[in-house]
Amino acid sequence: MLSIKKIIILIIVFAIGFFGTKFVLKQMHQEDKVDMEIKTKTLESMPVPDQSWTTLFDGKSFDGWHGYLKDSVPAEWTIKDGAMVFTPTPNREHGANDIASDQEFTNFILSLKWKISEGGNSGIFWGVQENEKFAVPYLTGPEIQILDDDKHPDGKKETHRAGSLYDMIAPRQKTVKPVGEWNTCVIKIDHKSNTGQVWLNKVLIVEFPVHGEEWENLVHQSKFKNWEHFGVNQTGKIALQDHGNQVSFKDIKIKEL
Image 1: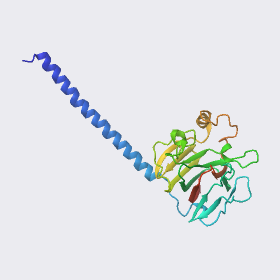
Image 2: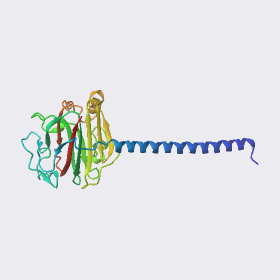
Image 3: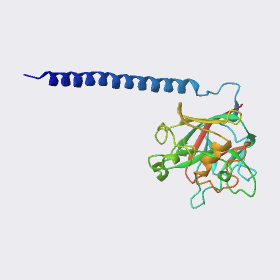
Image 4: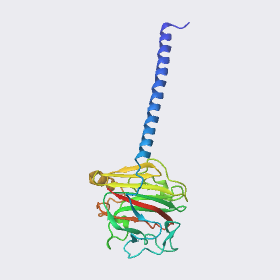
């Protein structure tokens, strides 16, 4: 026969188990609810281009673009099926054929679609200062990464994966599509609210400050910490990268804020 003491202990254990389970289930429900709210907010808040946006690439010509530090667009860039396509020349050093927008921007939302080749790497830059003393755009302009996460070595490092603020902030989750498929990327840079955001395929994956002490701390913790001119200009050009791999872009539109 169980003693009164043992019965009390069993009752306590049962109560702890029962209420503990209810607490855990409640927490799981709350977390699921928060996740759903975040997902819903993300889908609703992703900017979608309309007629008020400016077309930066119409799928027919390179009007509005030129080779970085060049007068025209390099021959390695062609237009095919409504997309601008970079195809590297064999045995040529990558980085020599980046292209830049003719116009400069400060506060904006940029929307485009990109497609990378197997094992490929490229990037989207903003705040680029086109000057002879800067050989390539990444010396001045921060980058949103374009990558084949699965087969490029950079995919092993979180802050180098597709959609990352390169070498500074990793994507919250992996939303990049398989090689050969188009990815929709939306980048918001707003110095008025000190906000940077990146959506990749309808999911908000990166948020960051764009100037001030917090931005400077991010830079200091990255490979760019000793780069005097990196990310210091609020106004600059948008550039698309030649990283030695085939990459395609289309549906490029921008809205100034």
